[in-house]
Amino acid sequence: EVQVVESGGGLVQPGGSLRLSCTASGFTFSDHYIDWVRQAPGKGLEWVGRSRNKTKSYTTDYAASVKGRITLSRDDSKNSLYLHLNSLKSDDTAVYYCVRGAYSDYPSSYGYWGQGTLVTVSS
Amino acid sequence: QSVLTQPPSVSAAPGQKVTISCSGSSSNIANHYVSWYQQLPGAAPKLLIYADNKRPSGIPDRFSGSKSGTSATLGITGLQTGDEADYYCGSWDGSLNIVLFGGGTTLTVL
Image: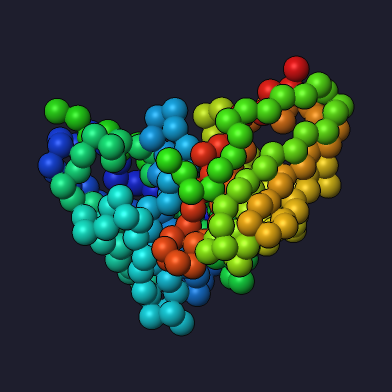
């Protein structure tokens, strides 16, 4: 069974940094793109970033709202993807979801979602 | 402001049909696949439609997707009270190299 599980959320001060982890199971991690999607309280979905698979040399893309503040890194030996975000602002307060495409040929169709981890940026 | 435009809300009676539109541009919907998601209160989104009109296994055929040019549509027939949820469209944007989501549409089954 395919599963992705996020961890690392919590309360962070403005200007601080965070590291979220996404740990996967049930599939060959290096074969798949893994993305992050976030949802601010009471708001819609916002794509955050993408880590492509080994075939695509693990290249990344990021949303404009986090570009310059975000790094996605993978450890295939641990089936894990890490999201590093710094210079945190109140606008970064959201539930962060780790997501995977339903099928390899459709990486932007997210058939697998974690339960989400809440990040709250506040003093 | 979302680049994919959805109506904020739609409503219909149980048993009826409803459609939700998603409008984009040539850099996203017109040239890339559209997905649709259902988000029930307090839950993570669930994939309803991928590749414009395909249903993942387990999604009933009451849900359908279509696309024409820069717009896509989600159709739901035989509405049930359990369909009350927020619905989002999503598509890759080849110019921005990002995934775009619509702002979401709240479905009320009256």
